[in-house]
Image (tube, rainbow, N blue to C red; front, side, top):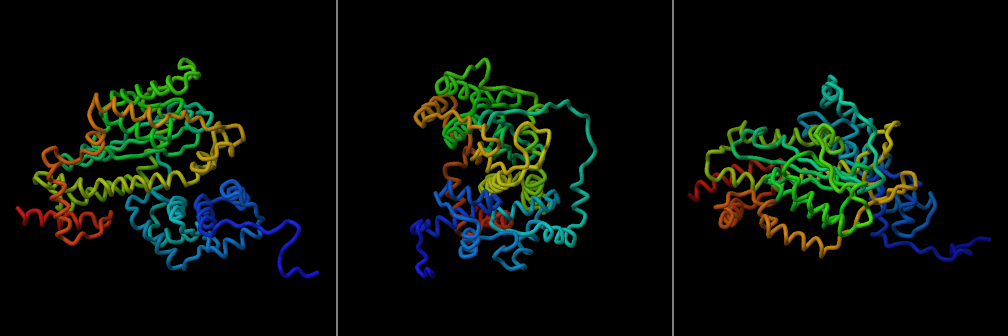
Amino acid sequence: MPNPSGNNQWGAKSYPDDEDLRSALMECARQSLSVSDTLTYLRKKLDFDIKKSTLMTLKNRLDIPSVRKPRVSDEALDNAAKDLIIKDVSQGNGPNAIKAMLRVEYIMIPRDRIRALFRSIAPEGAEKRAPGYKHTQIYRVPLMAYGPFHEISADGHEKLNAQALRMGDINFPIYAYRDKWSGYLLKIAVLPNTRTAAAIGHLYLDLVSEYGGIPIQVTTDKGSEIGWQATIQEAFRILCAPGISLDEYPSCVALKSVHNTVIESLWRWFESKTGHNLKALILRGMKDHIFHPHRSNHTDLFYWIFVPLIQGELDKFQLYWNYHRIRAQEDKLMPSNHIPAVLFSNPEKHNGTNLNCLIKVNSELVENARKELEDEVGPRDEHLKSWLHRGFRRQGKGMLWLCYGSIGSPALSIDTAWDVFQRMSAALNHAD
């Protein structure tokens, strides 16, 4: 018999709020989950159990984008991809990278369409991205970890430091932490100085506070900057995980740079996807005779404008990295052919036995450690935020904000940074 009401013996279906449902489906789209994985995600996230046909209906009703149905015009897809291809002056990003970068912005585009754009815009890029000559091989063994936060690797990157840029005192050292098992990029930050133990100690406390705990082991290069970080890590291990033997599972391990491969391998990808483009942008100031390091206000003005923008580009790279798919490696003992964000959040998805190894540290312990560190080396902002010259910090920031307002507070972005710099520099000179 007809059933116009749609009710049956199973009762009425309870649907989540459209906003929550769309947010969950958009996250599934960004993670590029399959239909079965999307259904599993909805059950786990929203306690919402549906079939494939209902999922397709909901995706259509809520305008969830996919490669087959991107929900935007072909022209908009092409323009978004063209923008990334043109801005990649080093041509280090191939079709897969461009596709992943667009996907985190919820722009779904077929790889074949990107390849066609590459052939018309940057046909020589494929040759530049081809593997180069092999250098002397270092003996390698398969890496092994038991799950997220079993071991994280930390290291600094100095390809944007003063020696590389040759712009006077301009210096943009970067420091990052990466999970060994999942490949997840936990944190990447630009600091005034990554060679001081005080700065890295404060940054590590930021990491502990952000994730609510510590790994079983921190692996770093050998250097004096790891002193406070190692002290904090071991103290928290002893206090929060006394049952884990320090002899069997050390809290810190320092290796030669060539052997700290988990984090060192990341920098090659950072350089090709973001680093070369950032360096080209920064050096434009010298090339076009906009920036003059000998002028009294240029260095402080440069930092005031560029530090937030560069950190923003690092944040974009972190997002891209955590949501891109790592290639399949048959001989790898740890996961491969996966998206880091997916396995980092769901380690059991790999083979059902891997667990999150995070050692929880309560906020009171972190606050006490921060206070003791500040008593020893000074406030956090003095080491992580002190970009401006000491004599310029108190009154200089206010003067720069007034100057910025005097030119109409134009939008600040990577594309407009040097134009704003020129206008503010002229305004400051006029005020003098």
